Image (cartoon, rainbow, N blue to C red; front, top):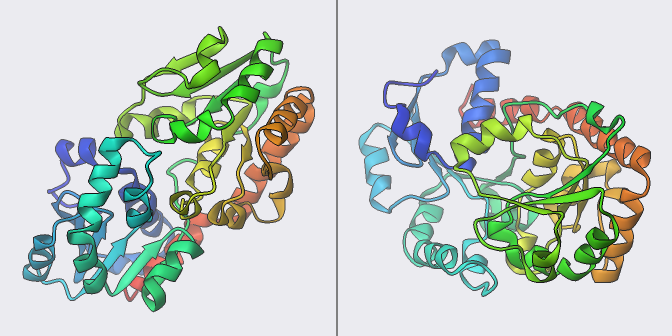
Length: 333
């Protein structure tokens, strides 16, 4: 499937968006569709820029001159994968400065050129779809592994709670740090894991049952995450323009670690959760989050049923199959 340009350097530098929206779906396409026999090899031309026969694919970031490279390589149609609101992110003062600067440079430079040149724009939800109009195609992220079973809930002595991606979401978890710290201080059998190179936010620094894990590069994270197990996964999101455009990926990451989700009801997340969404979302502020976390930690059987319900929902939704059909259409197969 993958041409000789895919070496260790590409693998180590690949960004999540490339795997979740392009390479994983095409792998499923290869395995499960007879029409894929006509699919050319994928070529990586430069970082984040791929060619599949006469179709060029730009994943999230690229330089304006990469469009010329694609056209010189024989590409006749361009697919662009955009899974964030770059302009909103550049204006969001709560994001890490380095990340904001990267978004600002891209939004003010190559992004408008790529957006104009793209024939199809793959987005994760309706908020971003409205920005790209008729060019937009909504696709959910596709992982290389199915959701985990929940056997780890049986006779769980220590309750494991996790917040994935703390580094880029530190302002979001900080918004509920006070009630979360109060719950942790009252429940010694509960441990919270944060993935962050920096300190835990606010009062969480004073909790002995908070564990900090350093963030991993994507190539390692995607291998390690399905091996981890947690019981409850938190994903609070402040109601900002950048967060409203977020993808549904955390719902699937939570399922990969066998955890029940507790989230803010952003559009793509609500769409992905479907009929199982009601107990997943917290609608309110600090007090509502405290009440929901306490209720979840006091009834592990109910928590397990919720994790099982989301796992069943994801499996039944057959996201890889849907992505395969979309890619068959986009590639003219």
